[in-house]
Length: 333
Image (cartoon, rainbow, N blue to C red; front, side, top):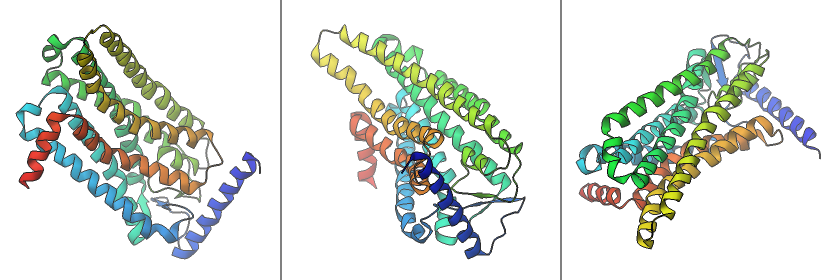
């Protein structure tokens, strides 16, 4: 079966599921004040079962990240640039999962599938914004590791708390400026009778695809963010690690080699858990047409849910200082 045929089959399946959904809930397809989120097309009967891991991942991720924020705020020895950046990362992960999971659970448990236009546009802004902010923080963490290894004597003077806060603020401003056009571009589109979004949340390109207008600009701007903003972050991260490797190779002591590289392992693991599924999802969404819709949507949700669980664990395991403080507070409770 050709890729073209499989792609058309998926569209036909999606339309059939949409019709069944409308008939089951006695909904009219046109209401200019709302959109309808289908959840996971084709797996409506399994929504309750799918909600169990969703809820578990969400709660575990919240507990881990709030625990991390609490411990760093209580321990003065942890109030260093690396841990402050880790707290920023935890805040973005809490925001990401909270922007998606509560509404998804309402769909799975209570069939509350409608979302206002304002609510949909808000999701279309916040999700890409925290995604870009996540990437910006990872890039800043790479710079932090570069300074710590290549300029250790000036580390505390280069990366002060004030400068870390300014870097975070500049990163937030950058994210807002780049992402704000996404929901604004959605407002210019015309939505005819079909206002059903085949997704668990208002992902900008998923909303754009149900419009009856030309979405070329929306698609191009999404790629601009992906390749220009995320691509620039990845380039700077790669440059930081090239300089780190060059600096490490000049060290004669094997023990010093190991210690320097060990400080980077946690950051590299966190980057892999974020960039690998993120790039896979966004690229396949735009360029691969023969993936079943439910597979794509489940993957989209998991890539938002898994990093908030894994990142605190990775840093807790690989960073002795943080691990000891986390264990101290865990035993106390």
